[in-house]
Length: 141
Image 1 (cartoon, rainbow, N blue to C red):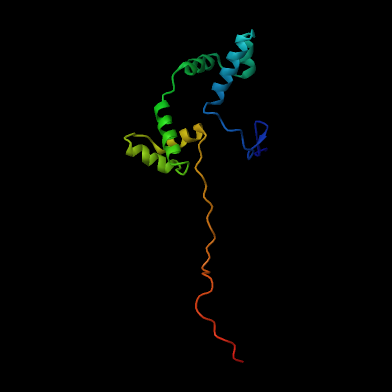
Image 2 (tube, rainbow, N blue to C red):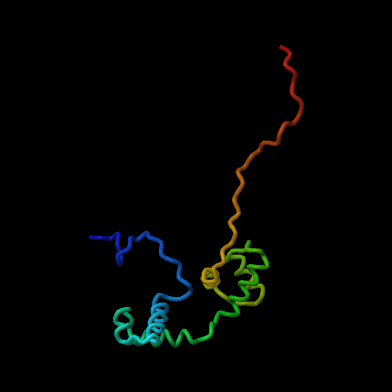
């Protein structure tokens, strides 16, 4: 039983960040580029292990306008207005104040797709030392 490997890669290997699209969508786009280069579609789909229906579905989706364009613009505006100090929770609250009804998970996903990340402020170590306070008694001995 080889539980540590899946598809040739170890479980814990960090994968490259997806660029807002699914793996199938990226495959379909690659196949489309190669078809325009003169390769046969049926061979490319077989090589990419992509169903013909999935290929045409993904092509249709690539042509669609972005349904979250307005929301992405608003998130970008809030992020830049607050100089990157707001994370997804505060951005979600700002969106609610602006009148948008959107789930926090959707906001979190869109922030990841846009490549925004809040600044991580380092916590300072607590120190109660306030310097020399009061008078020192003279050493009379």
